[in-house]
Image 1 (cartoon, one colour):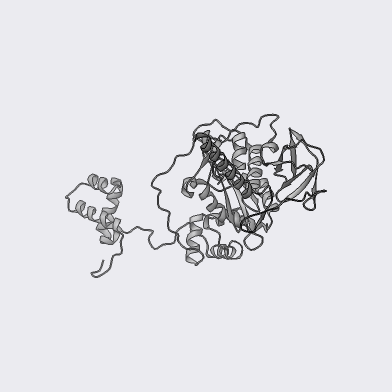
Image 2: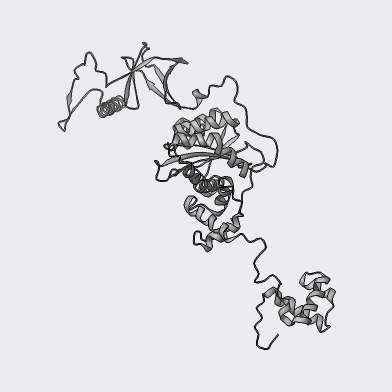
Length: 432
């Protein structure tokens, strides 16, 4: 090689060249050189021969600067980039490669596609997520614990309204189930959980956040404090009746498996719905049930540590609709009416005084009125029922000029204080 020529080599090759010079100068043996650079003795002999013939430039790899034998044709590359821009804009390289194979019958490695998209300015390198300091191991059995949550997102982008995906992921296997709803609340939670149980069975426990749907914000009553029982939301009460343990997370990171699931679905599922032109909750739920979850779980589900499935079968005779409903108790008025959710209902039966009935709001939208395990017929009244005879209230003028009816709470409290004072006065007089 002529003097002044620049030899472009990599650091690894410089290291090998340094060792080869030691071999040529007989400072080390070929066997020792092979050990130092992790090559075979035969390779060392070939490199020594090339250095003798070509000089230090012989250390460069023979294929450097040449096109790979597996390089795709330029027209093929241009076709793929054009398809991506027209149909798969915004898709990640992995998902785009899957769709190209599935829909366009074009087989291409996702990493190759990633490099092409970066060079074409259609994709950017993303920073890798840092390793979590402490990773909670998966549960050992399928059905041992579900992670549950709702994700508010523009699932239909600008084609439809924003909605909520109520999703479940098995902690041991990563198996996913979910449905779309208009909002995250008690009825959607009960409906989705009922569908999950009918498909897979009753799980041992459910892990969710402290949303009011899952954890009641009410303060415990005196009786609950004495019995050391926490107040339950309607969904929590239903899980308790089904024998499902409730576990509340104190941060989104605690239920990271379902949070990462939503990150994946907000990328993949949104684009699947876009490709199919789905823009309503009904169409989306049909797509999830008929096809999407089966394909998704086939791709991402993992094998549990233990093969036993801990889901319980739904017991025969168990009326899920009586459990998975919103219950509320009401006193029956003297005119056999009740008030529920600011509406009045006339019961078509006569009830004893101070009777209490239970109203059940079912997940299918129906409402039942139950008294002693019997369904009571009713009709909704257009307004508040008027009394046939209204007794004229006797009024008493207060010292401040206000008139209070006999049943006014303030008047009752003042009368009670007056009676106590009179009783104390008599006791002091008797003691004297």
